[in-house]
Length: 303
Image 1 (cartoon, rainbow, N blue to C red):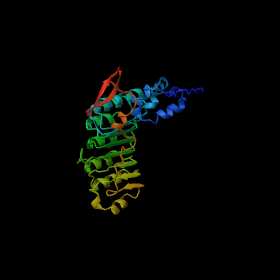
Image 2: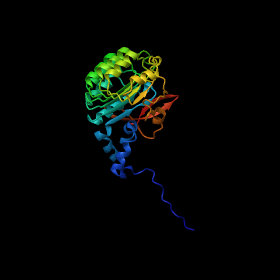
Image 3: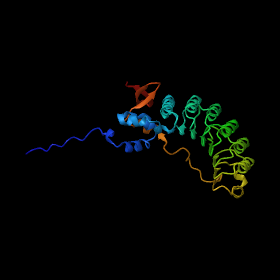
Image 4: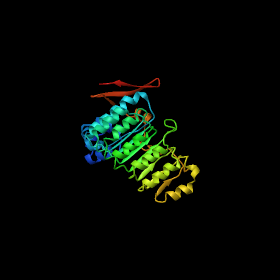
């Protein structure tokens, strides 16, 4: 009895045979970390697509949780993404990592930046933020979470970024428990009159600060005051009466969920389970495997 020969299934997908439009669409959706770590390693056509500046107009490097071993890696990934953008970067998002040197690197090479989102970056200071926003005249969105921000930073951001339309200053009770007093609110009112969207979740804004914002920021369409408990005693009805022109008003005692920066957040576990190379960049492409041994993460060079 003859045997039917069944051809073995192809072990490696022919990624290079996908239509370029489909490949580009897919790569635009996988996220910056995957793109940096893996996309350029799949095949020559993918590397060519990933080398186009337009692929790096949006860079999202938000990772859930901080590990000191990841500091150099994430900073270098950010620098490489900015380099590949060739000045076309318009939206940059980062959590937990980064420092003033990285902010300076970005702002020196990304004058077209329109959106900046920073979360819980403990090595970023007001000096770094001030130096950065001075170089970003086209900035429209400045969203800062869990980083102590001074009144001077707000003043400089407002005066240098005249197109600013969205400002979010969310405090963390652990990192900046005293952020957001009357002076901060007055700085917003006096220097950011063109705002359409303002989020002050968890800040110590008194009623005098709110009144100044409502008087000067006449174009506001949304205002988030959740957990601004100094305003809670004033009463929700009174705040509503003062804010009739605002379409989307969220009051101090309204339900709060940790929804800021939670979309497309990458976890370390997810990254470690990727079946591709993860790269460390120190001026040249040095490929390394992530390894976990006795609970410690380290990188083993393979080339």
